[in-house]
Amino acid sequence: MTISYRIVVTPEARDELGALHSYIAAAADTETGSRFTDGIIDYIATLSEFPKRGTPRDDLRPGLRTIAWRRRVTIAFVVEERDVVVIGVFYAGRDFESLLKDG
Image 1 (cartoon, rainbow, N blue to C red):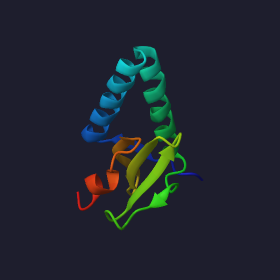
Image 2: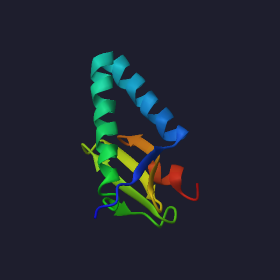
Image 3: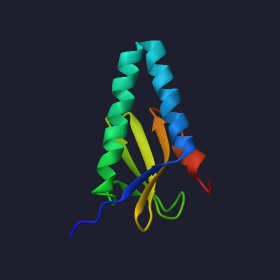
Image 4: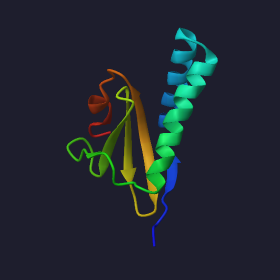
């Protein structure tokens, strides 16, 4: 029997997705921004079935894992008993390590 985890996206991660959408919409158009961020959301949803993917980053925070999407986005999350908690969505060259360390 496979356990399905609930996906929880923190307000900070939601804000980062919104900022990313705005950035892409300004550089291209709203539809492109929506397609890009919807793709990230769809990818995050797959963690409900396979939450232990990605790279463990206990060096930054206990239980933290990161996974890349399209080589441009780093998704930071923690797997809890029944939840996958997405704590950050970082685009391109953002220094997510400094932002997450001891955070």
